[in-house]
Image (cartoon, rainbow, N blue to C red):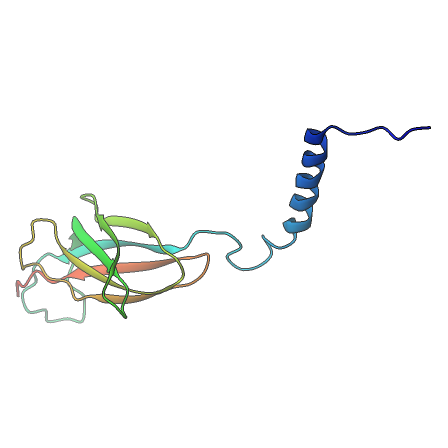
Length: 137
């Protein structure tokens, strides 16, 4: 009795299914298994505080900002984002170390934010708060 033959398409489908099953154990169980990574955060500015007599922090409000993300070794720009009025942002990045440089959307020198260095782990988003100083005391 002759063996039934499969068409080329059926044979390819069988191979693809076998490959999918074989590779299925390689993802999902490990940390970050195919999950995106990057930074997520908010830009805020202090509302201008007189000299505080208590240990409480100066109140802040969200600030639209331009955030440039660079490679700390070369200063090459990796990504840029303009935050909406609520100051929030989310940028997908490969795991590694990055430097965040934030400026006001109109390019004025104040308020000012110091650059931040962040570490992005595999499969996770690093939360950051970019704090702008209004310069008002």
